[in-house]
Image (cartoon, rainbow, N blue to C red; front, side):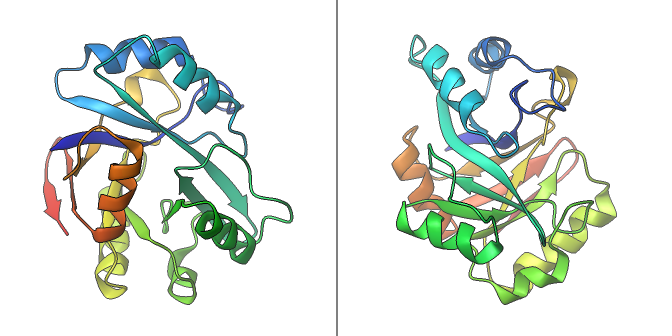
Amino acid sequence: MLKADLHVHTRFSQDSSISPKTLVELLSAHPSIKAVAVTDHNTVDGCRRTRELAAAYSDILIIPGVEITTPLGDLIVLGVEALPPRPWSVENVLEFAKANGGVTVVAHPFREYGMGYLARNYSVDAIEVLNGCAPANVNRLAEGLAREMNLPGVAGSDAHNVDELWTVCTEIEAPPSTERVLDALRKGLVSVSSLSRSIRF
């Protein structure tokens, strides 16, 4: 069972202060979470740098990703190392993800910049049901949406500062391999947990 934080920002996001070097060192030192998806806002540069630094560590996995700002809300694409072509409509982002073997996650659907119930109109792969920066009632709405859409629920701290890391995690039935993790996410072989509760999907 791999424990992962599937929504983390580095300083390559303008609103984050976490350096790739610090992220790698903290992940390596963590007793149980050994994988992280770097999902900077509209850029893959931070992910690329983090993966370069992580190559020196055999015990951690950096999952490539990006959080794309669409007119209808934020979408995370996991498993890609390039940006989708503009314009960044939901349809274009989903098409890009599918063509490149990515997994799409509706980020914090009921928080600011979330898609909310508009997600019902799209063939996404998962819903972020535990966002470390969202209040419990908002996460519960996201959990309900995931169950309604019969989609896997995932968790991400959405950390922009070091003290926000690892507040939640996704437990994935997969070895530490990006390809295997993406496959497990598509199949729903996940559960999510926070410091206070866990949810099985």
